Image (tube, rainbow, N blue to C red):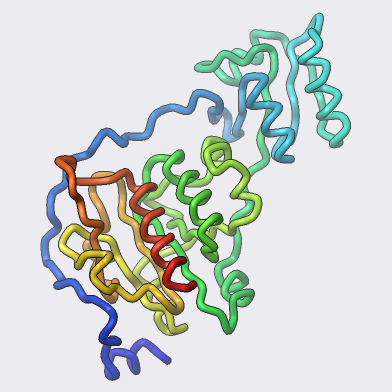
Length: 284
């Protein structure tokens, strides 16, 4: 059913609706500012992972494009890393320690630096085609800043049975090695799609029968009968700021997670997990 037809028909009674607001509620940043990763860095438009454990994990995940090992005597661990890389067909190159220092200036590389393959984003139309005739749910992230939060959300989304994570090309963090490490392998199974304008993307999804639920402190309680069945897009806002005004206006309804303690907000990855698993529970 097209979005225009759905508006004429009205929302199902089971769905809760939140009043639209013209102004956004100010929220304080709860200390979720993005911090420099302890194991990876960008240099000269390349992504490098420094350190023996990081290099070993990246090799195991098949993410390494080239492996750089310090010139000179190699201990047993470095020899094994070089052998593992060679077995995968990954080029192993020797570099002076000063060169490795330059590749990852803020990290302790322990004599090895791995150049990581760029992440391959999925096409949203292809993802939806694979779910034709089913009731998928998607996670759209509006303005997320912390790559580790992104990794945690991808990991939970894969475990909860989501179809994909949608990530805007602009005003948002992207998938990095730190993201993939935090996702603990989920990036290999769950598609992450880059999208353009959020409002237009949501309108297109509505035309395909999706309902859009946003997360907002002014929404109805998640546990007061919110209907998360059927094709669904769960929208999560940025750390501290929440959803942008236009994104909120594009939502069909909004929900909030009841807070019982003195702290008034959850980490965005934790909040996303609660919504995803409620959607998964209702699908059972």
